[in-house]
Length: 331
Image (cartoon, rainbow, N blue to C red; front, side, top):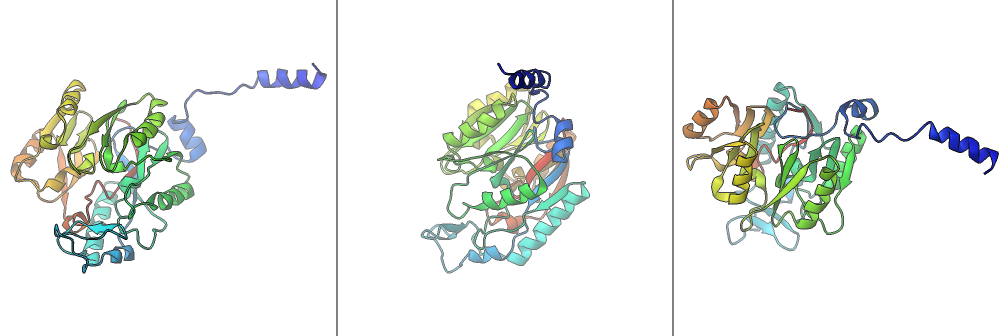
């Protein structure tokens, strides 16, 4: 050993690496990344979300391209529009603006996408490109051609903000944020469907496992895309669900975790499940909940903020789809 090697080893020995506390420690995040980024639940006080006001990209929809089932789409180009009528851009913008105003009234900071691709006509549904986890986000890999590339635009905005991107899904992974939900701060669920495959789940799980979080998987039926149209956490131990479209083992898992459920009614607008908790027992939902369901929510101390959102929903996404949480408080 030379004298220089001895000095080097003695120096490094007294200045070791420090693995603890972990990356997602709120004090460290605030010190080095500016804010306590990330989410470890779906119901804590919401602090910041990523959104995009629908714009000229909606003009990709060509209403001369009527499909057999009554929707619109172009198989060769890969775009589709679920509504029976074409998009009303001005109306969509008005409803999106009203939703944003409701969020800001709740003290939520709205971060806008810096830009979108010229034909990425579903970019207003920001939930699917970003999954908020402890210490930052996971960028997903969207499956259909009309959505591929939304991840890149989200990444540029998040990088500008200084939000940590803990993983970008790669390879053959397919996953969308609407297929992911937190059950509690140690348990999350991912729905396997035409929009989320096992490789996507595996890559998400790699990040969560390092944070001590269990990821459970459920299989959706038929061509249902996401879990966020049939399941919504609204308090640490309370969820709004459609039991007819959730697998029985998942319903049993909710019971085992002590999560009480409120089942939607056949008179409800089905989009009410695609809502957003802005704080425990305080939720923004699309108009159209029946008195049956509202009474059950009220009985459990849930405050409901209804908004008109039918024109946005006609494009395939509700209030939940239209927001990607970036920061939530712990509960």
